Image 1 (tube, one colour):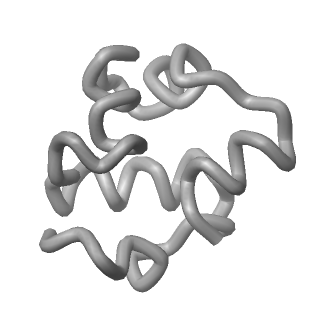
Image 2 (cartoon, rainbow, N blue to C red; image 1 turned 90 degrees about the horizontal axis):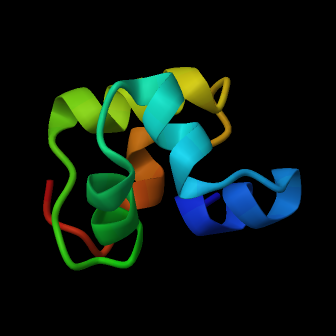
Length: 64
């Protein structure tokens, strides 16, 4: 599932993801919208924060 799908389904905000991952809300928003590419450390942090609902393979279409 994509990060946006997860956030919609579980009613999470960019701020919530930012707090759980240690990245800024602005950076999370830019990555989620495809403006910035996520680093492997961010992908891993998101996977952990979402309890494996958003996995590295879910970032297809974005060069990591």
